[in-house]
Amino acid sequence: MLQEGQEVLASILAATNASDKDAIRAMYESKIASLESSNEITNKIGNESQAILSAVNNGIVSNDKNTTTILSAISADGSATRALINANEVQNLRDELESERRRGDRRETEININNSNSQTQAQVQTLTNSLVPILSGIQSQFAHNTNSLVNLGTMLGTAQTASNANTSVN
Image 1 (tube, rainbow, N blue to C red):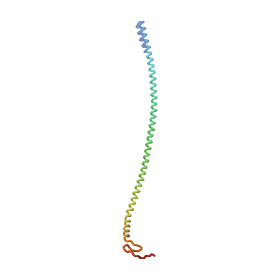
Image 2 (image 1 turned 30 degrees about the vertical axis):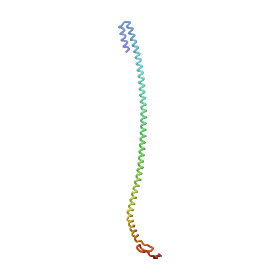
Image 3 (image 1 turned 135 degrees about the vertical axis):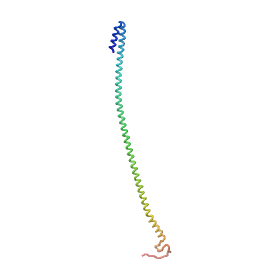
Image 4 (image 1 turned 180 degrees about the horizontal axis):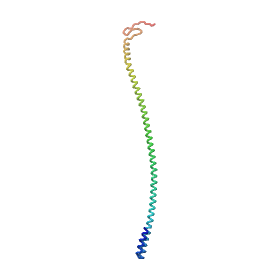
């Protein structure tokens, strides 16, 4: 681009007189200085942009590493928390199972006691039912015997009158 500008300047200078040539040359040199300054600024901006882009890329890489580290820590913490929750739940279930087993043992004992009581009551009822006729017979015999009491000392029945009799037993 600079070479093209110089060629254009040479053609313009060839077509103009000497005083105009000096003015045109001064304007050209001013523009060249301005362009060179612009080029320097552009180069500086480019270099600064590259430095900023590099810093941003390094920050992104650093942030990616930090993010990975944080995600790994969160994952490990989550795994540990899940393991703790599972262990607590398993222990609670074991405790509940043991409690149910104890209740079952108590229920079984209660059932055995109730069955034993029922069996005992049935046996008592059977014995009572079998003793009632015997007791009724004894009661009727007792009533009959009561009506015919004999005084063994006098050998008199209840319907007889007592008299003094000597009874001797050898």
